Length: 185
Image (tube, rainbow, N blue to C red; front, side, top):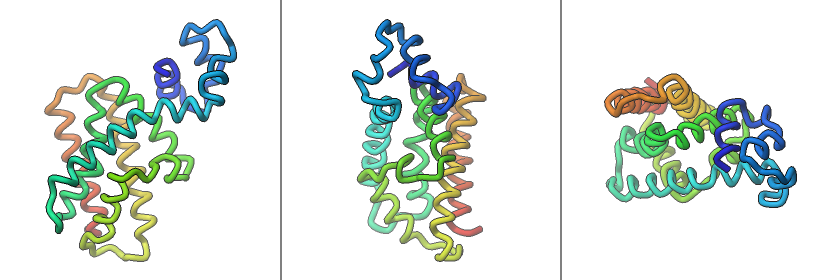
């Protein structure tokens, strides 16, 4: 899984043949991926699952800390902060780079499965006061996902050794940008 994660992040999920993953992992059995994961898609899901579980747990913890009528900024932080925390480690940066590739596919449900933390945050987001046109909510959410995932992946790629203060400044910038999109300002 570690070999697949690194290769998918560096070269792209679609550009990496299963044989390259097997070779990079030091496996001699060319059917190792098929045996353990059934398919390349199964391997990709196995790579992504631990990160998604961790992100959702962090979102749920943040949601439990906010009140019943949170500000837009608080809701945005629930989306941004758990993902931005992944910038601290190589595996997390790889995950962000893979997610940015997958968001290009256009099936956000496959890229961002609706886990409990994400579902609760989405409800709060739809209830957030906004000057934006309500009919454009789906487009707005797509734009937010693309900005968030591509922004974090780009930062991960360009600044893998960023210090905490630089990561925090970038996280605040991402929060402010997404908040402006939501508020329609």
